[in-house]
Length: 171
Image 1 (tube, helix red, strand yellow):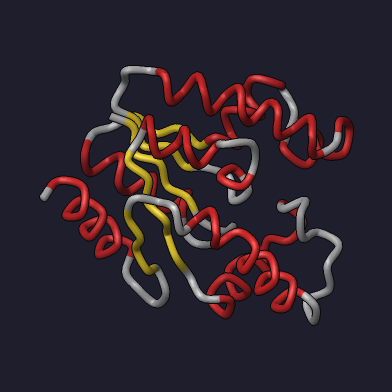
Image 2 (cartoon, rainbow, N blue to C red):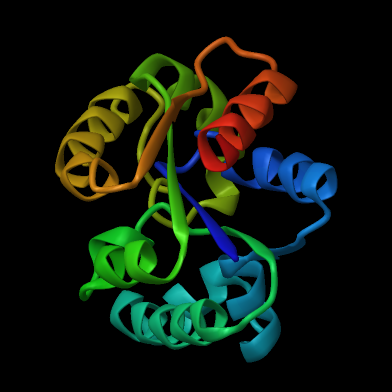
């Protein structure tokens, strides 16, 4: 079984996927890290050298391969992954999808501290960031909302979030 965690950057996908995979003894794959490993470049380097369209093609290839595997995997997806091609459809067809939902305030608080690591927001001022997040979230929620399950992550203990995911998947 593949469990796919989706949501906007800063919603907790990386942190929650680590705890969840440890707790249920599944392999953990972070899609962005897998793309970096395969291409021997960081995500910002891929964006800079080849552009976003090339990155999205690499992302789609890796996504298809992972979803086709018969392993038990917790898959942490990039925030934009569900938006491109028919990715959300294949995510839902080949895995259990969980949308980790967080408010604009929570997302701003989390990602403003790591702007240099995130090519999408690296050049946006702190002042403009909340509006950027809100607009982006509005556009992406159409895709995120197609997930089979949704879990709110605002002001919650990661262990509680993981427990809720397990209950939704296994009840």
